[in-house]
Image (cartoon, rainbow, N blue to C red; front, side, top):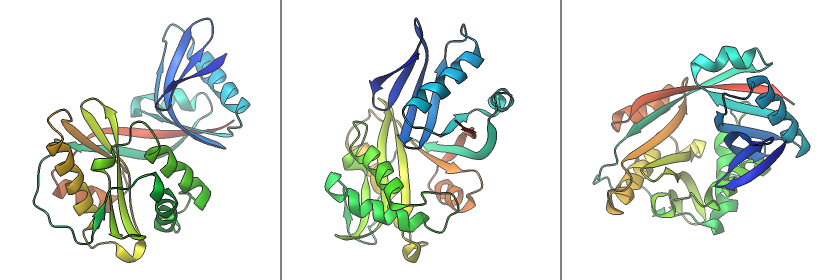
Length: 248
């Protein structure tokens, strides 16, 4: 078996032929598989066993796979544990006239250290989420330095270098963009910064042309604050995924 990198975080699992392709955020010792497409002609047990083995070879000890609710029993039968449920909310981008509360900037690779520290502070008190600055830096770098990053639709609030909130947008497909990360320093929450950044992202996508017809945001199902914010902006839930976890 072998893992082959296809670009933009897509990888292929091959035997005598490709038996699976998946999109993963790999930050040792964890691999977060957001999309898994496998050949149904190959035994599912073989796909999972060989995926675990090849990830183990590159130092991965924790595997997280996002699956649809109807797949949870299959994964549980292979030793996975059911974790958090995430929902996707989406809408067509529209132009708004919302005024920025604080100065806005489009983050670039130069701001990765600042954004990483901000993200760590935003999640510091949340159990199990980005427990150290190194992990947040890996996440931010993977987004901002990646080929899917949409710099002109990504925004950070604050007077540089004192950034207090950020919305990082990536391209999922030719017609869909996604808010990959949205985080605000605890002292600056509930001030409308996230709303302003998402609105600014939509404005930028609209001005860029009609190519992107959908903006999506993933949120934990239990995060009622985030869902209310997005509902007020016209986003509607259209998908649910369950995170299945396994030790390798």
